[in-house]
Image (cartoon, rainbow, N blue to C red; front, side, top):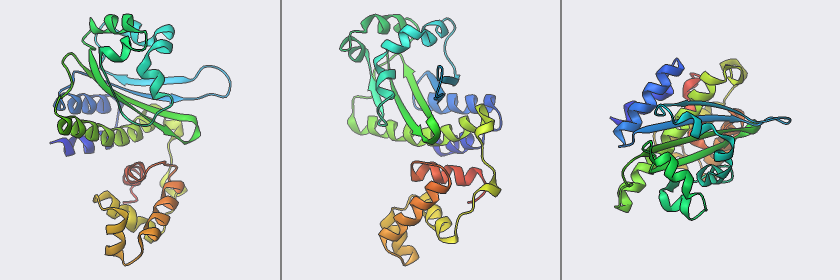
Length: 237
C-alpha cells in the first residue's frame, strides 16, 4: 500500500531506512531510480548537496559533474520552480542539451518526474524518479502519479533534513502550538479542506487559515502538509 510507504519514509531512523523506503515507493510507482537531495545555500562558497539515491554504477560521475549540472534543463528549472516537472528526450533536445540525455539514457534515465521544495533558511529539497519507459499517456494516471510524488516529497524532505543534517533538527520543547492550531492541523492531516475543518470546529474558513499559517510559521514550514508531517515527527499530533 502506498500509504504504508509514506509512514515508512516519515518514520525512517537511519539514512539506510530512508533509502530503502524511497526505493520501495519508487518501484511501486513503476520507476527504477530515485534521487533525494538536500541543498543548503551558503552565503559564501558553493552550496552543499547532500543526497540519498539508488543510482546505477558508473552514473555518479555524470550525475555530479559541475558542467552537466549547470546545463541540465531539469535542474535549472527546479532552481526557480516549485511545481513538478515531467521530462523526456524532448526536454533536453529543446534546451540544446540533447547530448546530456543521450549520455544518461545509457543508464536507463530516459524519462522521469522531478520536483523541488524551497524551504526557509536557504534550504531546498529535490526529489526525482526516473525510468527507461515513457510516462503514462492517460492524463488521469499521470496526475495521480505526480500527486503521490508530491505528498511523498513532503515526508521525504522532513526525514532527509533530520537524518542528513541533524544539526538543523528541532526539539519538541522549542515549539508550542495552541490547542486550536493543533485542531486545524489534525483535520488537515485527515485530508479536510479549510472550509470543512471550519464547519467541524464551528469557526470560519478564514480563521482556520489564520491558525494554519500560525502553525506553519512556528514549525518553520512553507506548506500545510509540511507542517503536518513535522508536527507528527515531533510528537505534537
